[in-house]
Image (cartoon, rainbow, N blue to C red):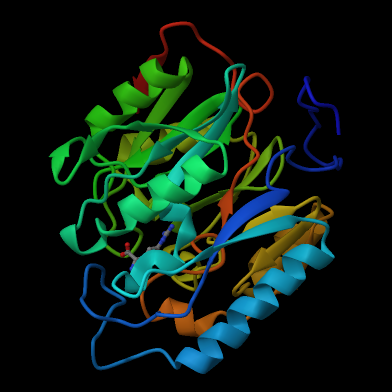
Length: 307
Ligand code: ARG
């Protein structure tokens, strides 16, 4: 994998996959439970089995390590049951000044206690912080809404992240940000409806977005594997890819055939306990190795394009 130039491939051929996604932060689920309901999956009457959740999490860590990824573990705060969804702690981007992080400003008050711990952890790991808002003041940003795609930062907004945060990310990081409006209540983060897999392929569920956003996202992806609403609601888009292996919580048969036909290997990891609070494989992992200059094109002053 070259450090500077992203590889390209024609549909129908294979590449080594995405340059990023080889180094993750994950939160050990010592205090995982459902204390409140901020998405349609959460039900206080359906609590995760904490021991099973820990076993599932350890298996996911083990799988990522076997695939050659690196995992850094963050300890969970006792008062932050959703902190296990490490993806939402912040968006780590490294540019020519060094490692940086756009800390999340959570839409729901219940999750805002996570921010202080996220700030401390990222600072300790050498990431210089920026914020779009704090304690409910300023724009909401939840990092599970963002991915580098084709040189731009693709961000879902609406249920969690606010449009104003996109502007700030663009200027803070000097990058182009492309916004897509999410309308589906069950796919409240972009990573429940979208999963880039290599330079040209991504899983995309158009039913998660308003009409113009769905069309714009499909046209951004040269080789989209289009998911039906039912397929996406299995959490199959909430996956991570290491090389050509897609680590997935579930994979409907049709989706598996589409993936295998493109040279991807499907690796199923059961994280069912974590579905009880509305998150899966991708939500449990936060990539630390996205580079401006390789995965994101530098754009002095930044720019925002809304679908
Ligand atoms: N209970 C969490 C919430 O509603 C789930 C987060 C899922 N994370 C994700 N990256 N989609 O915020």
